[in-house]
Length: 564
Image (tube, rainbow, N blue to C red; front, side, top):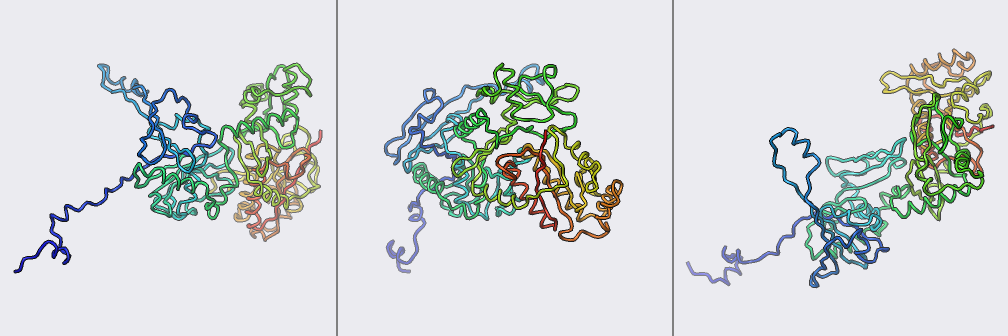
């Protein structure tokens, strides 16, 4: 066999093993997960963004790295974990548990004329809370994620209590798999896979961005330039436009500005879009209220919360004329409102600030304070919601005015007393077979086949509960024959004439046969009706009204006036 030279082997496509091993391939980049924050422009230097820069060790990046930056490091004193004493109870002769420490590092780097911060260990606490952009991680993720490859969502649901949940799926899925309610749910952190696999394998976050990608240190600045462009993009509006409708305000400076504006509004006695309401659901029977400085011995207990009465009580405590009293910033946050039982025993107490329900307009945005939290409402969305709610407004002459401080049950009983058009079914509970809880079919039933639900003006969550209860009872009445039988018997016990309006209970109602009326007891307001309703109440009403119309009901929203 003829010999073959090295060059001939190469041309023939055969390379000896010893030559293959000598060929060098580029080193494979490691996959890393980094946490990135975008520093706000108001903080021009890394030092200005730090809480205590003098307590940290500063090391500038070497010149040859390719971009400008500085590393701050911080050690922590080794300490005993809090659980150690508990464990030592089982070892009277002693046990060896080493103390530990957690170092932290904070890398600042410059890209596209902005400062970025990459945190290592528990380093985020080294930054001033107002120094970084809120929702940076959320916006980058929404602008780059494949909408069909989401893995988890953090959701804040606006109810009687704000409920925080994390919804995860076993494999990458679209938004529909997470059962998002774009009326009540505020989107927090999002995790998913980007459409561009060169950007990252996975990313997610809210303020900070968690990015998992093949990355070397020298590529950091280039990666941050891409992230900044993604943050400033509006691409997310194609699939996630609804996230702009309502946003929780978390910037400390913005919250403080709104608090200052609200305090000025209160001291100017402009109560058009501000009122008081308990920040949680309470049992109104036998409950009254005391304003700051009042006691059961020195003041009459108030049957309801009223801003004008509250200011008058605080002025009396300060021994000044009511018209000249001004609420101080300290009182604004620290003053307490107490709920007391008829016996004088304290039922609950809340900060005055948490009892305030307020709406402030500014530019193209509406700001709403509810249970001590500020929300930013996009104004076009707010205007559309008001227009939709206004279409349901109706005046019911069969409903008399309410008396000041009159309880809902007292009003309902009085409205039906001696009336041939109404029967009172307040506190008459029903529980269909298989149902998890009881509910009222309605407070009043009219000869116009109206299921009337009555509620005093208050915090938006109370009214939202009213709208939800009305929808649930109407749906049950539509679908459950036994419920219709029981309801007719209860109406017949009070009025055989009105019972005839219910027809044959074995027959399901026809479309348009019945009307669901939501009646809110509220004083006249210069803003008019339903603009005087809290925004979240308008929003939830429209949502439930749409649901009721789909079921075939007519829907109305009316205001019951309050007379002294």
